[in-house]
Amino acid sequence: MLTGANVVLPTGTVKNGRLVVDGKRIVSTAPANAEVIDVTGHWLVPGFVDIHNHGGGGASFSGTADDVLKAIRTHRLHGTTTLVASTVTDEMDLLVQQAGLLSELAEQGDIAGIHFEGPFISPCRKGAHSEELLRDPEPAEVRKLIDAARGKAKMVTLATELPGGLDSVRLLAEHGVIAAIGHTDATYEQTVEAIDAGATVATHLFNAMPTLGHRSPGPIAALLEDERVTVELINDGTHLHPAALELAFHHAGASRVAFITDAMDAAGIGDGRYMLGPLEVEVSEGVARLVHGGSIAGSTLTLDRAFKRAVTIDKLPVQDAVTALSANPARLLGLSDRIGSLEPGKDADLVLLDANFDLKGVMRRGEWVVAPQLP
Ligand SMILES: [Zn+2]
Image (cartoon, rainbow, N blue to C red; front, top):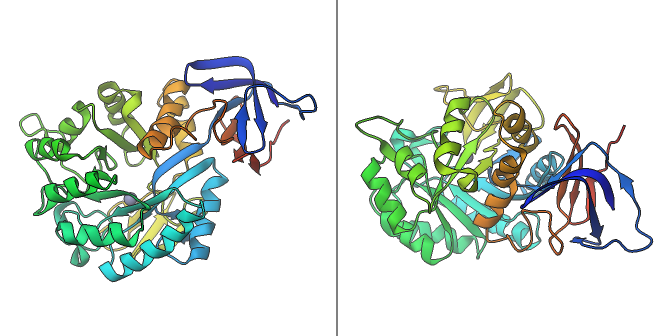
């Protein structure tokens, strides 16, 4: 039983509240012999859910099973208790092979599923993806990846304006896989069509897509205005100007924003040379850029930092930050009955933060990943 905390619930924050964990779950009443931990002055928020993440701790989700587990571990230490592993553009054969490996780890409950980012993206907005390996989103090709993931494909990012794009969106929607619009050069009208076809997520809104123009509003306006769409934001201070974040929250509302890391290997480690799929990346002062061309190449963000930034620099209400870091991504994954909020019956996934919003403890499925560090 954790007592004295500001407990952030879906209905609001309970001051001087308590939270009881029994086994793997949150429960409403404490057993008589419950161990009491006094966390007065701290915040208790639901474990973070990251639907777009390529790696961390020096390892990537494109690597071996050991690499994948290392990256998961790194992000767990920073409060991410549920994570979808993202791949980057590579040879189809290699992606099919990696989907097999990741699906096994999803089966074991280590990850919540797979997000394929590329190869079905626009050469004009390729970001840190290998141009020569890009291809049109032919439904038969998209199908190969879904099949290889054996029910564990959660999301595919695609440029829906390319040949086969809309049919692929329909295919994904039929299979219960999120069609995410991203790395796209679509117009406003083309984006509206893709949403009507069943696309429901904007992959890192603002990044790797045409900017908002008053005569050509492009994908950003279409994605922000449609209530069926949730927009991903990378809140690391590099990918987005705070005013762009403010704009997204103002138009979409907190219920339609999902904070993601889009992290690569350097997350949780630091500067140096790394690989992002087949491409070489230089990380300097926490910013990852391609060695050739200089494109931003993912982030070194962890979700605890995204949270702190959201409430201290962006001045978002704590409630809205929690919604964007836990509740919304949990809903997108169809896991709202188990995770995403601190309610009795749900998994005991929680993050303990001090008054400055620095991480002081992480519990996953009732076990401390980071034991409470109390003064
Ligand atoms: Zn990414």
